[in-house]
Amino acid sequence: MPRGRTTTATRPGWRRVVGGTVLGGAAFGASCLAYAHFIELTDFRLRRFTARLLPPGAAPLRILHVSDIHLLPSQLKKQHWIAELAALEPDLVVSTGDSLSSDTALAVLESSLGPLLDKPGVFVFGSNDYVRPVMKNPADYVVKGPSSYKVEERAQLATEELRHRFLHRGWVDLNNHAATLEVAGHRIEFRGTDDPHIGRDEYASLAGPADPTADLHVGVTHAPYARVLDAMTADGMDLLLAGHTHGGQVCLPVKGALVTNCDLDTARAKGLSSHSASGRTAALHVSAGLGTSPFAPYRFFCPPEATLLTVLPRQT
Image 1 (cartoon, rainbow, N blue to C red):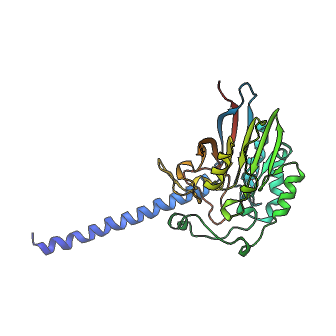
Image 2: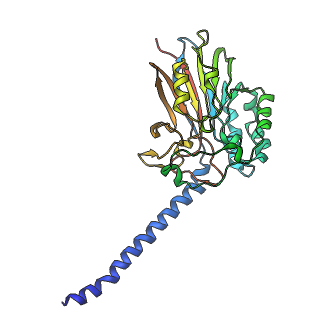
Image 3: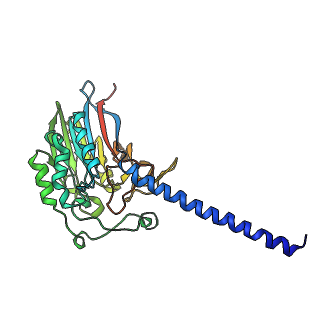
């Protein structure tokens, strides 16, 4: 068969293959986006972990860790799910920030937390407890690394009203503060920082050896930056609690998180792991959180979560 005729005959076939591949890829991408927004975004999960950190013979301590709620009044399913957490009857509630996406969510946040606010609780703030979220290019997190901005240039949220509501219900403010509480028969030393992601952390003002009379030492921060985790671990904190990462928010099967939006490695973007510094090791729990920015309402292979962490006595 003449060469020219053969070439002419095959071109349309290649065009169909390429066109079909492009359309198929677009359809697959659209399906993934639809799943991430309409299904996984509200597929709330309760994760459970145990850690042996208490003195031998001590009774277990149940800690409910909530983070990155990013609440809006329209998010009714999220509000109902949070309200159901009270049935867990935890001994202690720890909130690691980014509770709001709008001032209009203050009342519904308090209502959703409900009886949990009557439990012993501690809290720190994240950047979205200070300023309203804005539109960002999601690819920037992968290409440029952790986000940065000047808080004073963004629209402010009702931070002090949020603080007042938590304090009024009895929760303890750990934003660059330390406290010692008696919880379920345990003496617990807490040290917390304001959000390291926007440079509000001042751990140096709290630094020093852990209280030897406490049964458990807990460090609390919003964004798990190494400078804070290192300092808390070096001082003898047994357990570090943080949020901020959203678990990566968009993850890949097997590989997991692509980014953490801080200097924490992606292998520890969520869940219970450990952190070592200055010859000491602490348990580290990073919550993948319950929400997202309203401008990035999707999750992929990283469902929203809260965690019930049961702290047990060390084995002798």
